[in-house]
Length: 331
Ligand code: CP
Ligand code: NVA
Image (cartoon, rainbow, N blue to C red; front, side, top):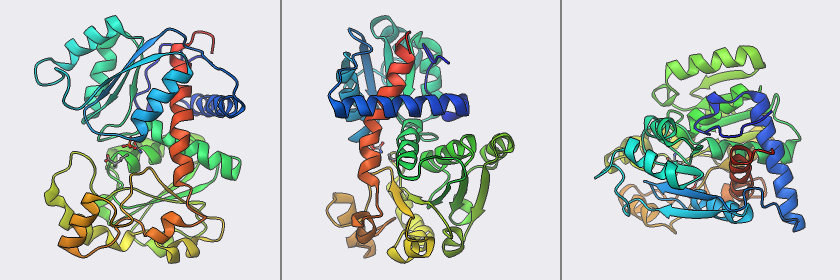
């Protein structure tokens, strides 16, 4: 199997075997990093990191992974380039493709990263769009494999706005890897019917189970993982806070919900998370709506069943595997 010169835009483009290959490679590179064994598989290459939205984990993961692989990263921040304002994506792609061996893109519509990949002539990696966040899913699945030994048949319940990048990508990933996925939210927050149909078709081949629920207590029974994400994503207008708080508060992940799932259930979140009043937005929401946490309680984030920081670490190992697999001819 080779992913050499392939872009990593969404999990729908990859077979279960290819996703498994990337997870195996991530585990191998993680072990090498922990043992202090050099793995400069992309020595001398240069990569561009385009961020039209802000980031902590994804940017740092790409930069650290690039350094470990022997590459030089160039960061283009949300304001500091011509992209979109003075230069089209197609022209930007053709310019960067002449200088760089690979390009990461975080931004808005999925069609932008697809266009970039079509024009650049070098591998493009999706660092988050409105629709998908595929490198996050690799990190989450590596974490689940480390805890439970395998992915097949594991039950992952996603609580909250399942129509956006995290809900969509987890549903696709679970379908591909033969898992049991449940989206739990009011019906209006379930993934788009067309994507559900695509995933049902995939599930017919992999044995995955896909379910859609509006009842948190029922949904989490026997769950291996309860997953949530912010109620308002980057780029969405402030005006949606009120509606989201009203609709999604019953889906907050609490200790009672984790207890209902069982003692072995783990809590996951891509982060950043609103679980206390230590953030500007958290304080604004508290002043306006009186909530001291949103999608998850502080108690859950801090509990031994929370593996959110393991996921965050695994962003680096999995992003490293994606870059190595697509840039190194020998893998
Ligand atoms: N989980 C994630 O993508 O985090 P950042 O927004 O900090 O990159
Ligand atoms: N849904 C979130 C994910 C952040 C990693 C967002 O798009 O802001």
